[in-house]
Amino acid sequence: MNKQVKRFNKLLTTSKTALIIIDIQERILPVINDYNSVVKNTIKLIQGFNVLGIPIFYTEQYPKGLGPTVKSIKDELQEAEAIQKLSFSCSGVGDFFETLKNKQFSQICICGIEAHVCVQQTVLDLLENGFQVNVAADATSSRKVKDYEIALTRMRHHGAEVTTVEAMLFELMNVCGTDIFKQISKIVK
Image (cartoon, rainbow, N blue to C red; front, side, top):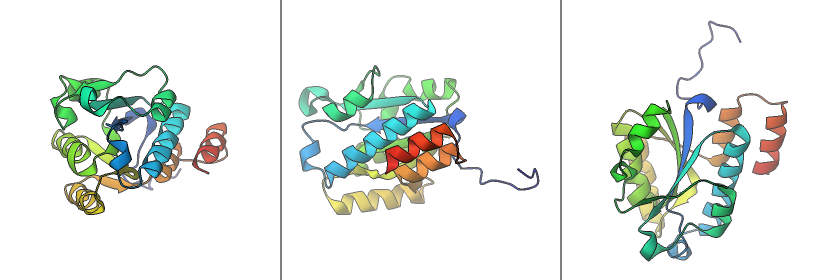
């Protein structure tokens, strides 16, 4: 690439990125708007991030009441352990944000439920703590469409990049014609 040509500084890069999946749990999922798409697109994200070798974290909000992470998602997460929380924002989970910083993750991709509660509070807190945040709009939802729409608008207004699963994965790849490109292309079809 020509050294004089600048690339947009918020484009995702594999070395600085981590994925956080927020609270896609059994007992709340059935009341979430378009929950089948949320699950399907979250699985695509997980598979793509696994191909790219990018770390994945996932949370469970009050699992005693809301149950565990949905089995189809949990199966894709392999050996990752759930981060259990009572606070709506992931900022309330011990030293989780500090762990992200210590591992040199500055770009955080987010998906999950509910957009206007746990996702939004986490996104706003990540932004406040200096992270770049990318929200996968097609792998995020709420019970009510209005709550979802307003949450995306608010997060975008405060600096979050609102995008899609496919856009995230292609941004992280950067180029086509590789084995990784072929694997990701199959995932997003």
